[in-house]
Image 1: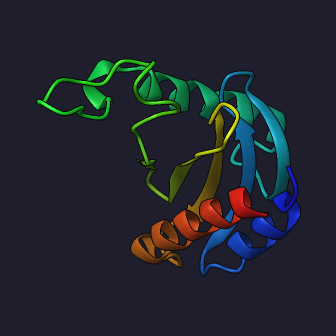
Image 2: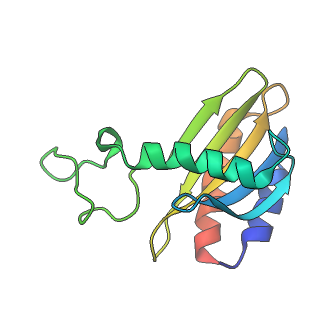
Length: 137
């Protein structure tokens, strides 16, 4: 997937960014990483955040609504209806932004943001923009 390194560099320019990665949520593998990791192990962090992403993406409560108000089945809505997740800790935020791709939409961007130095709203907007550019490249 071209553009992973550029995408990660762009995300790290956000105020308060501590670390970022592109992760495949079906396998838990990091496709690219930059900066620090909350537990000093990017691969372990990728696997852990993939569990959270998978849990949210596969829940019917978060499914996209189809015409008529019923939740869409997997055959009606490829990928996930979840756009992003925010996990708040005492000293930071973890933003997981799902990336819609033509093949299987099993990729997400993970940004670890310092709570005191970061701007959560700005980070969420920029992460969405980065996810869109990542697919277009």
